[in-house]
Length: 207
Image (cartoon, rainbow, N blue to C red; front, side, top):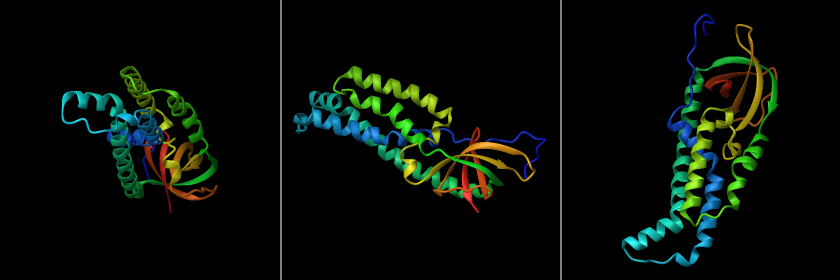
């Protein structure tokens, strides 16, 4: 049990873990961008030899597709490793009693509508469009890692669920948090183990 008189360390997801979760959240967009760019430039899918002009044309017509595929593969692999580690270290979390539960899985729909759908109507054949997309993604990334968006992820929703909960600690104090759980259901009055991954963000492991 933690000493309430001392400042506790927050076990934030940092660096690469934040990056792979961000990348994973955009896998649906990356797939659609790749499909759109390939279909629009299908006539250029032919071997042009090993020369600068062929390389330049490949980057111009399919550069974003190549980046999207690499990021998707890396992001998905990183996400699997991140949650594998979370499942292991979550055994060091605190036991709490859930007193209120609000399912937040619908937030993923809002995330798709706000951060993914607008990009689908863009053309990605020019350098400006590619640069604009990368620039906007960098801005969104900075917002993403400093907010609870880190848990609002369309891809994670296939395996995990998001809940807004109020809970009681072993010392009797009541708090609230946004949590992610492998279980699709979380009931009130249940005792669970929570492991902090950010400010009022927790990974829940059922006991």
